[in-house]
Amino acid sequence: DIVGKKLSVPVYELLGGKHRHTVPVFATTAGPYGPDMIEQAKEFMGRGINAFRLSYDNMDIQSGGLFEPRESIANSAEWLIKTREALGNQAILGVDYHHRLSPAETASFCQMMPTHTLDFLEEPIRDESPEAYEALRKLTEVPFAIGEEFASKWQFLPYIERGITQYARVDICNVGGFTESMKVAGWAEAHYIDLMPHNPLGPICTAASVHLAAAVPNFAWLEVNMERAEDTDRSVFTEQVEFNGSGYVVNDRPGLGVDVDESKLTEPFAFWEAPHPHRADGSHTNW
Image (cartoon, rainbow, N blue to C red; front, top):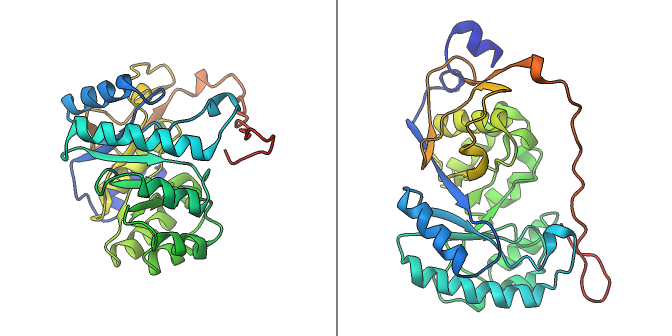
């Protein structure tokens, strides 16, 4: 950002130039499974967004409450089938189970649905064991999206080299900035794997992710939080990357294209405690 502003060029020029003028996104539906979720997805499609990550059956997980995997996957499969029927084959549908399933539960979940119900399944099991994921890869044809928690290219290595993941969920803030992200992107490109960046934070993370997306050829969709993307408040971040309703515009402002009014940064950061979901028998499960 500093070098780009000093040279009066956008960051993507420092990375080799841009491949696209708009960055496509995938949106996440809000709330539990049901008719309202399908209607929200239809609304997104009407605005030009055709890639969705659907709300999994969360079983009150946001409040740190009960989560029973087998009950969840049964209800999820039922509504995912209904959603595919309602939206047709043009929609790109995925779901994120956020490491909460076992390989056996994941296999059962995928087997509950007809072929092409899902276009991607994100992080169904924990990622510490590539061998477990490799075994799971043989049990389902659903493409995987993995990598949002990886902190280096070395963590991506087995998932790319062994063909375990079909989308690289690189998080530019976790993996080591632009330098490491570009290495992961090049490695993934050599194996025909597209990036699908994790983008859960704020305007700076989003802007950096947009520049990364502009600079690499192998790119699918950027995660978007629709509520934040459409927030018109510019009191703190006076210049931000522009969201046009269906994607992020790649602009030519110097650096990341983000300006911060530092005089507004007066309140200390409020740390967030992740929920602690549990099963009916009292044991804890993954967040």
